[in-house]
Image 1 (cartoon, rainbow, N blue to C red):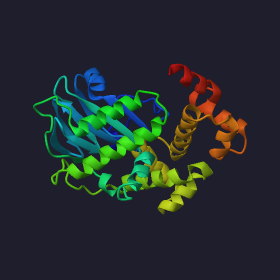
Image 2: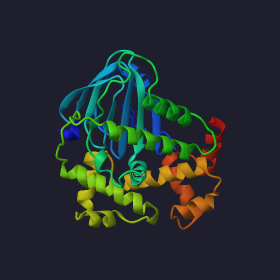
Image 3: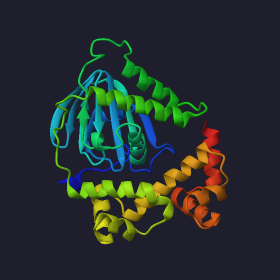
Image 4: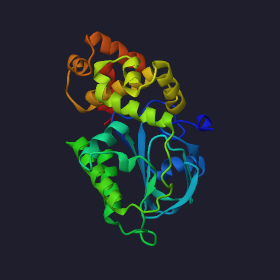
Length: 296
């Protein structure tokens, strides 16, 4: 049953999204080695993953199907897909995890639609199966990794440009027989994805759950059931999480004052924003900003 599949932000973690960015980047080996190179079937909500294998391989389970991901290949894992991996020991590569709003934004510069990224797909080719020579796609992932872990000026713009380059390469190299043949998406997953799309447009408006439910043609109670089944938390918690991510980005990557951030996020008073932020994170906004600056 889908409801028994663990739902994580990142595999094995139940903590909140760990970065103010709308993307997370880490090596395959960092997380896989902790789990003896075996990642049990799980799913993510509101997150889209791009896996790139530089060296080694992985047996892939995704939405009930099996495939092999080899060196030089890239796998796309949309939100809601149940996926697991058995990596060859010492496999090298990167995992990029994008928040759905960022994917939606990048899609505008492509074909304007996320349809191409709505099901799991794998690129063909084994550009690096027998050599560690860096290929164009490998160089793009390496450049993204450096940018993500650095703090150079215009970092966000550079990361988005590199992500667009990676997605263009992937679209050009998709295998006709991707690992999972088109699978009809469950209605609950469709509703959850559409909720995310609506939330990305209206989260600053502080609309009630009923507003989003009406946009989906369901009741507020049903939307909460969907969110708990697919997302592991209530609709309101997801709405608050979206606000929190945007607040963190503003605190870390802009010089906006607390009052300006409060206004931009639709709070009627800075005090309400501060209370919301402290309740959600355990830190006042200015304390969070100071800690983020110190960590860099």
